[in-house]
Amino acid sequence: MTWRGSSSPFDRVFACLVYLLPLLEAVTFGSYLFNQIPILGQLILVPLSPFISVYGLISAFPFGRLILFFVLLLAVVRNPRINHFLRFNTMQSLLLSIALFLLDIVLQLVGLPLSIFQSSSNLLAIAMSNLLFLAFFGAAIYAIVQCVRGRYPELPVVSEAAYHYVQY
Image (cartoon, rainbow, N blue to C red; front, side):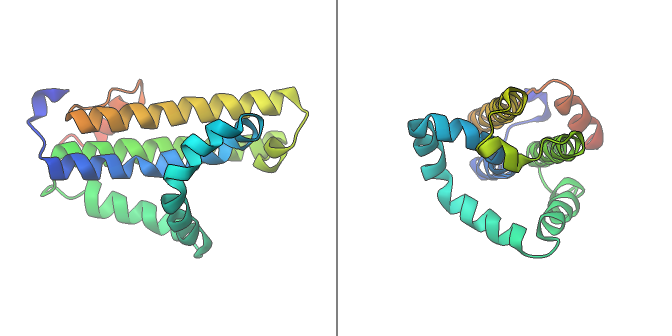
């Protein structure tokens, strides 16, 4: 989808920053993997630690994550004065975050809350945790790399939904 025009370096940086939202939320699913492979935890968690602490402060505030969601949705995605590249990537990032949130709710309803993933011997919980972490972490990293290159990241289903929402 590079046909929508070029993106400035400013837009590329901010498009990369919005993908920190699903990236940080995916890290919670990787706790079991980080316990089993400590070097992986060091490689991922150390560079993200400043962002994790800021996101923790936002999450500690009542409705902080919801407020952040609406600020990004209303101030960026629904603002026609902002470049399409940035609005599209912000919407795609929000959709990834919504998917992670909904998967977390479904896992809790099934009886596999995130607290089980840290020290569980349940093979299903471990497999689900690793799969969700790798899928969403990989998607966020892919999107960040594509944004750095100035291209629209193509994620199945998510990109289509984001494009239809930010069509104007």
